[in-house]
Image (cartoon, rainbow, N blue to C red; front, top):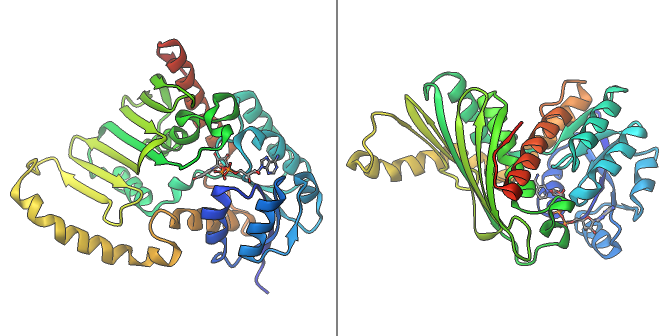
Length: 346
Ligand SMILES: NC(=O)c1ccc[n+]([C@@H]2O[C@H](COP(=O)([O-])OP(=O)(O)OC[C@H]3O[C@@H](n4cnc5c(N)ncnc54)[C@H](O)[C@@H]3O)[C@@H](O)[C@H]2O)c1
């Protein structure tokens, strides 16, 4: 008989409702056996909508439930450490949303605890599992862009009403800790390199780090420049500049994988005429992603498949707590730099 993992999810907020539960419906090797949320209205609403029978308001009770084999920590970021430690303590496989914790010390404790047993601990950096990121990694590793020199990136979102925790650095909020951390992880992943120095600026009002700009110097010499905002049109893109070509990836647009050789003339007629053709080719080749909600939402489906695979086949996780800690260190250094106005060495 096919092996199924009994998963309990803690936190019935936006991420669980819009991304995790819809994706998990098509992952046959995972059964969402229980949901937990301290807000029973949210708990009941999601349990009804997704047909989950077991509703457990107290997250500790879900963790202790012997029928639950794996725990997904999707509560606000300030609770990740405490809930993650409890799940590991109880011997459960762990899926933990980003950021893994709010300090390097807490991340280290999680790594240590996970290392004491054979459970899997997986961090929810879903963009690593995006089809365009997988293609980009291949292209970079094949040398098609030549040595990479520069990266520029943007994430902007537009929440009609931001949860209180998202407004406070102390609780893991602000654009650097909440949004930027995704791209800091991607830079490490795509460039196979660690951040060496970070310089950041941010604008804070009612929301701390409501908009931010972060520059990194990576240990392989690549420079990156990113901007993050909570208050504009949804956008999530990365551009990579190598000495043989450039690559633009959008995580939302179906035709968002655009590679050009260094010889392509900027604004040239060839590239303008080629655009509709490029779009048709991209729509056709990405049509399969519509089964999972399109190319962006599909990244969550892919990450859950990867999580299940690591548990069932006892494989190394593709994105672990050490990755979570490294990305957090970059984000925290960026927050420090934005506060002091000075660059921070990692
Ligand atoms: N990987 C991604 O793309 C992605 C996207 C969105 C959010 N996230 C992460 O997921 C987490 C949740 O984000 P969200 O947007 O769903 O937040 P949210 O504010 O929409 O929802 C959080 C939910 O957790 C519940 N909650 C609060 N304290 C709790 C506790 N102690 N135990 C159980 N439930 C508790 C709240 O009642 C709420 O329903 C955050 O850490 C965020 O960084 C990741």
